[in-house]
Length: 120
Image (tube, rainbow, N blue to C red; front, side):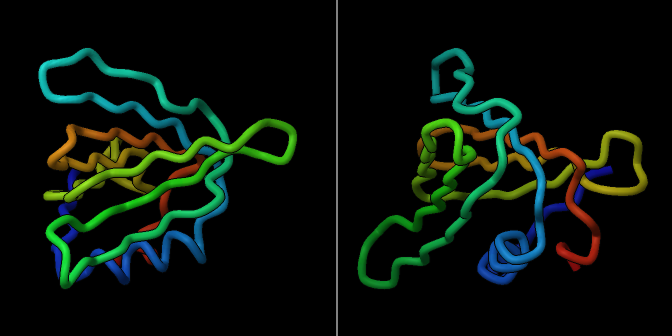
């Protein structure tokens, strides 16, 4: 099962995710014409911030991941176009977030998953 988050709801969705999700994430990023790169694997999500630009041309989404024992990794997504959540088994929590952007596709796998109340 897939759910696309409408652009008008992105700010609310990311605020809910920042405030209500506690778990680990793995991030893979594929630049156009390139192979996928592993950015982070099975580390805590520290922050997620969506910045809508009104006077500049590109919105940004910045993820900071890692824990106190390791260095933090920051991944910035420029000009997100589409956000799609996936439930592999069709019920329960969402375990995948795909972000299609001007700079490529970022795939975020989450464990234990994103609850539906954070999406609605």
